[in-house]
Every structure is written in structure tokens, then in C-alpha cells.
Amino acid sequence: MSQYPNADRGAITIRAAVPEDAVRLRELRLEALARHPEAFGADHALTAAESVEAWI
Image (cartoon, rainbow, N blue to C red; front, side):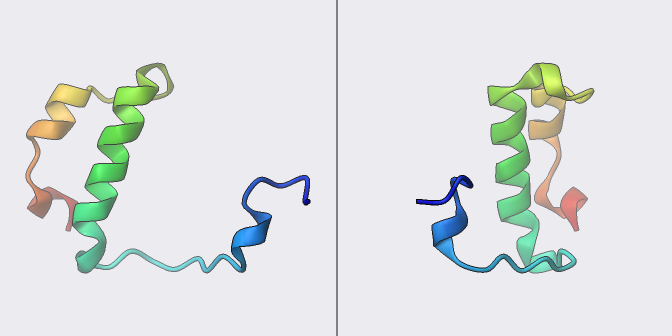
């Protein structure tokens, strides 16, 4: 077993986000804001009120 928790999942690809990623990125951001609000300068309620189009 690796010392890295996700090492067994395979290679990681880093790429620029595209418009098709907007829904998932918004969901991920809202989850992060809900779980760890102290880590962000943004407010969950205000961010949740933004439309998906704001992420494109």
C-alpha cells in the first residue's frame, strides 16, 4: 500500500476546465464550502445562489 491515499487509482490528468465541467465544479465548490467554511472567504449561501452560467 502506498503512503498516498489515492495512489492506487492511477494517473492524474490536469487540464483546463471547459464549460461542460461547470455543473460538477459548482457542486464540488458548494460541498467544500459546506464542509469547511473556515477555509474560504466566500459564503455558501451566496455561492449557492449563483447560477451554473456564472461558472462558465
